[in-house]
Length: 319
Ligand code: XMP
Image (cartoon, rainbow, N blue to C red; front, side, top):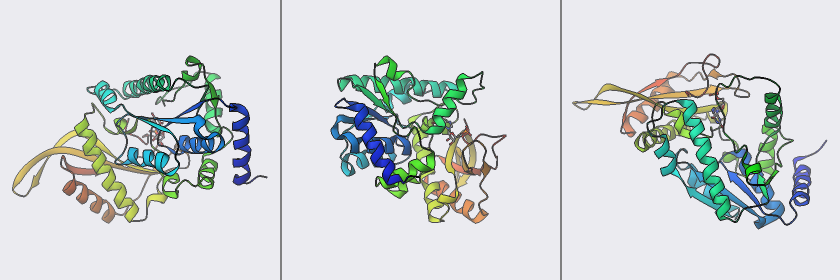
């Protein structure tokens, strides 16, 4: 029987024992796991840790700024913020196959990360926010053939290539325990309670080819949708909610003119672990309000639809 406060102290000691006076780098994704790992490691070894945030330009509205300011200003953790959005968006432009998109993003992520790590003069250790379920899953994957529905990217292969050892202080924890540890470390509740967000970001919420313009439209619609969800007090009842920008234009009317703009699909699901999910049953008033705001406030969207598909047979993301 242990408390999170005790776990924190034990984990700090274990990190110190493992790392000694070595240098550690940690890739921040903007998510809870890598953030908790980084804050914990920083508490253990201070400025022997440097974080690298590879900004692929596929984050939600304001998210990069929040992560960067939380780490730099609030926690004083050395952070390299690499704006690689031109590289990522440039290589993704015109690509519409979802798996190719994921692989391209995963490959570029590793390349950019490796280059930045080299600029820092390398490091002895690579920190990762691996959780217990990730550990079990990667073991069972080696046991036999598995069907890949969607490839999830991580920095696999990187530690060996760069001759680094792994530091994984969350390996024994489940997701809800990581959240508890995050609270224990003073991370804001609003950050800890955030819906999961996929590594490839908005690229897989923009079916078909992506462009900067489409990403901007999607970011605005998504922010309005989430704002309405928070205002209605529904955020914590939903596992994941997001907007998808469809590669379809439809006819509409505005004032006395005809419009021809994109369709935005809204998604919201409840789930326990993301493996199965039910679509969220909003009341129609809510959906009408969100749709009206999106169409009025976002130039480029003139129609909004709601996705009533559960998983299975659908997946949570559209790609
Ligand atoms: P699906 O769409 O497979 O999503 O029902 C299940 C959960 O996984 C997330 N997801 C991803 N996360 N990289 C990630 O890190 C990915 O490529 C990816 N694809 C889906 C999704 O957001 C949901 O939480």
